[in-house]
Image 1 (cartoon, rainbow, N blue to C red):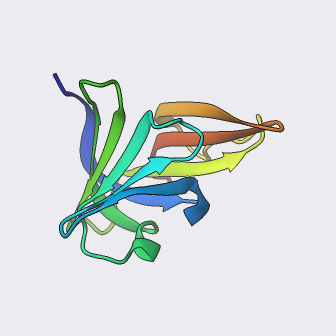
Image 2 (tube, rainbow, N blue to C red):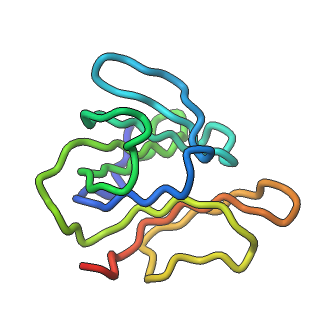
Length: 126
């Protein structure tokens, strides 16, 4: 059973490649675990690009919970230039929050009063 939580065009906003651990690279996709979530959040990118171009561009995002309780973020190509949503991935202290309303958010402790943040927000620049 794979439950879809969200599906739509989204701006991908990842603050630093150090937030992604490469798990698998195939001819049609690249998979990453998000740092801090202990394998419970996985990003799978099917877009044509090099790994250093994963963020700062729109994607068709599907968020789903897999049968093994992994939150999977699936990125595919989109023609939408100004999406209504933004996937926000960053680290920070306990006061770090997205700059807009979030529809979905997960926080994981990293240690030393730092946290990993994953949020799906309304895009304030739309």
